Image (cartoon, rainbow, N blue to C red; front, top):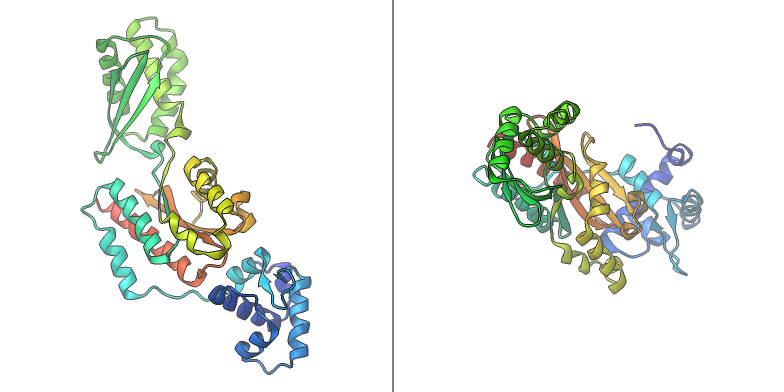
Length: 350
């Protein structure tokens, strides 16, 4: 990893004191003063020298003084330097790994596995655990059925190769008979069986113009069912399961009524969080967004730690933790990483 400008201009002594300051602030939640740094650093430095180093850290934007306090707290930039270059990650305890393995047991249905992963992350970290549901595009089709509803609406029942069932309601441009819907379902099931929905969608889109040249009612049904099912409404299918939102009420920096209301509104609306999680789908490992790095003001006092999980070699979702920026990164990072690996293993061994 390339060194940051701050790291290049900060001597080793300054890096060590920044590490001590961040660790002490994470542990206590109180601004850290020069006396505490002198005591905890293990360095034989005079109070004047330590104050000078703190001033250097502040000039670099790595720490800040809240209000009139004599102590300092890490900034987002300080946390980033700490995580990228100074953090020492702790291995998970044996009982934590055992609990994760128990929760992610192989005889659990995929949907339940995702819920268990979210709840166990929340339980072990005392923060909010999140797992995004697999994108429908990555689902391998076994069968599709269409059932007519009132008002030109059709219930779509998608059955995946591993037996998972997903339902959605689409609005069609005209009404279709039961026979036409059955024929459309048979056509799509026959031509799409064994294909990922994304592959099937692209194939049908490419063939759509040719299909439109056929004026038979049966082909009209196939065309519209394919368009409505596979080429629209994908964003509505994206979702996640979350556990332990109320844990965030226990952190002083997040406990104001207005901040909690904004956070819970964001959790309920989901759109912004899903956009953030989408950025992690291509990541190779753990991703960390600290405060304003997320790009969403509602998360300015939060950190989001995520890792992707995979099925059949393809990344299909992410899981992670949402908590205050003052979180125990040395424990949370391996917790998220190991959970993603165990969830991947459980889903692939089904």
